[in-house]
Image (cartoon, rainbow, N blue to C red; front, side, top):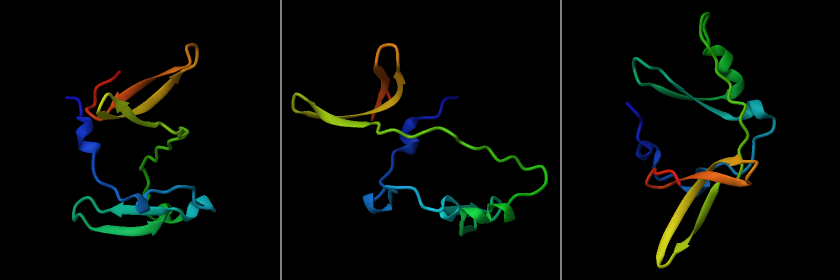
Length: 103
């Protein structure tokens, strides 16, 4: 069953959105969630080694972020779209609107 993109639409105060990477990178924040109890603990990323056990798998996301939010108007209506990926040959992108529909 597909996951609705509406699950990822929530209010996040602008002051909580990182504008630049932390240097050194291992000083970035890490939220640790204990699955059984629901207990949350705030740590720094270099401490992740304390959370990993034999047999665990760590998946690294090596993708690069690019400015992907476009806001504008169609007539009187405000619109917001997110660029998902560049199609190099045509120099256009596939976009997803707030309603989750692809354009």
